[in-house]
Image 1: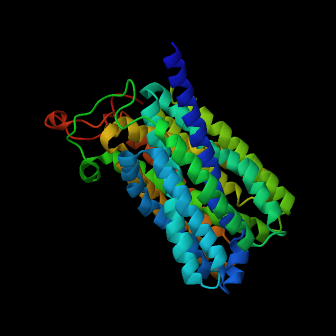
Image 2: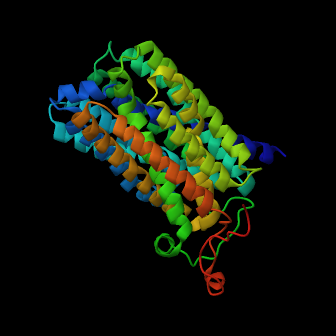
Image 3: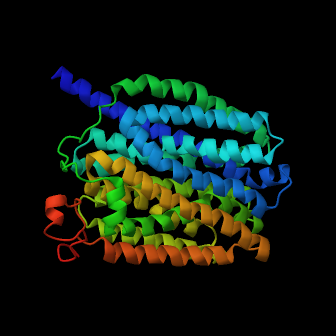
Length: 420
């Protein structure tokens, strides 16, 4: 009995640690987001020119995601996150110390920091949850862990906005870097000895070991449906991470109102994360995912209606924020089995970050040419509408990836007669 209680206590502790890691990771993007205009001015660049550093960061995060997935499968998700926290911390400290060169900033923050963020967020945390919980409970558990990002929006984003006129970006980058590289890294490495070893969690379906991430990319149509949707997810998230505050500043939105809207976005993100995990237990996941993408599309259109204020956007976007990530991860983990899900989810995150990269750069070019983000916002609204349609029709009936014996009987494609 005591062993059972101790085991359950360790599971809850590991979930709390995963939550804390996701919370801390928001600082990496948050300080760049808030200091974006000042960073561009510091390096003597326009927004379009400096946005390359943010675009590189987004793209490198995606490129690193499959590597992070493989590393998590090999050494464990918490050790991977410890490595990521140390690397991200060093990146932030280094750009604060050597801040004369834009090339150095782009390489250190845009590439090294990107690996750190990838190693602290969705891919390793998904693998951690998958090792700790049986199939039915994974969605809700993953929602709890990833809601660390929501609390980051609620707590840290207003703090950075408040701090921005009072502290230089150099001081803030240095302080964040030290916090990540020392206490965060040490704590994660110490607790990593409690995480379970690799292998399917209790109650998980065991797949024959005849599949690989490459075979999924070659043959599985469901992977491409998920990828199309996740591309739109990454594109819209990147707009929030890099261009949203600049867009509001251009519209003359007061600083206090921006901070309040970001907190509201975080609150709704928190609620949507929990809600998506619970709703996935009762309703068809492909319909839920399509609904979240449709909400995302409508929220982008609200940015084109300034007379409504910024709160309607914050509420609707926040309500859709984590649902797309959680449901995509659930589709991925249920379909691809314990041996390759980290790699496949990493590949999906690569597609996610390609969308982010394009939004960062194209958004900056759009602003430079028209002094407005209107065209970018309209494009993102259309893109997420396409994601909704693809999820509704393309994911119906998708289940575990068929094994080789199954494929000899039928092709790998969704069974559209099963659901919907």
